[in-house]
Image 1 (cartoon, rainbow, N blue to C red):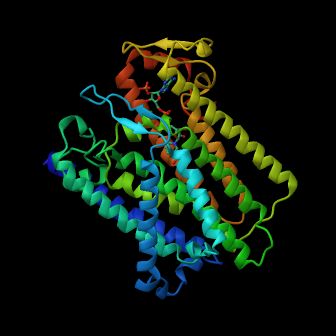
Image 2 (cartoon, rainbow, N blue to C red):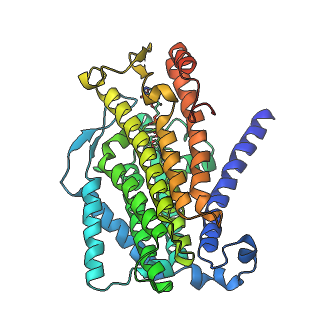
Image 3 (tube, helix red, strand yellow):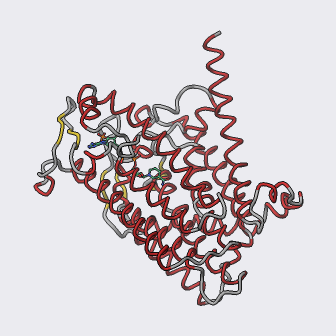
Length: 418
Ligand code: NDP
């Protein structure tokens, strides 16, 4: 009976998320796109807004497929170095071509060419809901394909969390770790390319839409800040693409609906909600406020980048003379834990930096509405949950050494607070 209850709770939890997440994004986008972006405004919207023609357009779907094809071709270009991933359960490693930054540059070139030929990028703004539903369909079809093909995945390719035997749960979590078609790694591609680069293209389209709809000669300062900050975040991620190979998503998580929807629908359509919101609510900030926000973003970026790069360099070569100043705690596994500098301030300084940047992005949009704070709240929830997951894994990996680290570095993310 206990087992039955556990099964029911597990599967109904997943069904809840499967249904809630797509609807949540739809509601957010509907809210963002309104002049009256209040919940009262949302309730009073005509139902025709949710009619099939306003939610679905075959041309938009075709553009979405073209975008995926374009990014796939870029990812296969023989430019950039080829690196080894982390060891799999069978001790072997997979090879990855690192050419994300080139893909970003070529995508920017493609957008430039499109503008030169007077392609109206504000089409993305005008059909934003339809782009979202196309991304939702693509991620659902992709997850179904991944679930079916995972039947034939060898044991060392199976994700620990996605092989419970409960169909719905495994569909959501993903059964296969690194699904590949020849050398094309579907998870690595989806994590970094179509959604992240798409995020920037959407932001730029929103900037043009703001000028068009508000009859402005130049974008509002808030829109410029959002475009600039998020360009920096994505360009940085693609520049350091190789470092993704040590992240939990690549090393531990299976590729199922959760990641496919996250990469292809959640990231490009919720992370852009600030620029989407600004189209109807342009905001010009005082010089003092602009300088203060840029400074806050710079501090967040410094912490985020330094913490991530230091840990990555240390994991690649702990004997690197450039890192000899770091204090460390040895663990029984042979690996050590950094216990000084930023990693001695809190146990997840990289999360702290990310959250500070998210705060700067939200503040750029002012205080008149809660929508621009959606990303900040989401990131807080995500990173606090992620931290708990990581803490659990590290405790079981490193045992007493992890306890010693926790005693030396008391706070998880926020110094003195949490
Ligand atoms: P981390 O890069 O922090 O990786 C955690 C791992 O680092 C641990 O499992 C452990 O692995 C190692 N580690 C932990 N503490 C130490 C230490 N003191 N010394 C050395 N190694 C240590 O986590 P994530 O992969 O979650 O995040 C990477 C970045 O991506 C972060 O900056 C995060 O903010 C960002 N991110 C952003 C998201 C977004 O939506 N904006 C989503 C997810 C992540 P081991 O010992 O095995 O090496």
